[in-house]
Amino acid sequence: MEIDFILVGKRIKEIRIEKGISQVKMADALGCDPCYVSKMERGAKRISISRIVAVAEALNVSVDTLLGRDGQTKEKEAFGDIFKESTPYERRLILGTIRGLLQALREEMAMEKER
Image (cartoon, rainbow, N blue to C red; front, side, top):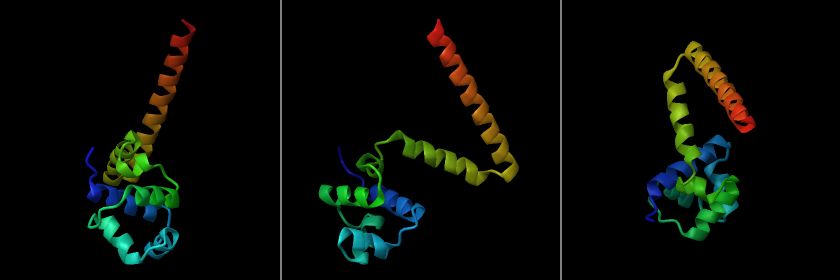
């Protein structure tokens, strides 16, 4: 498996920002220079496996998440894109529809188990 360091860097940056962690704090947690964090996030630096593990621990996520191996990352991005393109009204409708579908699916699965 070939590691796409640009995508890994993008994920690191997104998660770091989501968690409200600055590059300086991230660098402190990793014991490196903030410039190194910047290079990682741009994909300009090939990150060792041990460094990827350290980053995952610092961000409290799995290594699979950083490597894009959990399907949830792509699904979350897809939902995020839909929400970015939607109006507040459309978002409420989408959420209501998803909740209704989820409830219907769970009820159907429960009925299947009873059969």
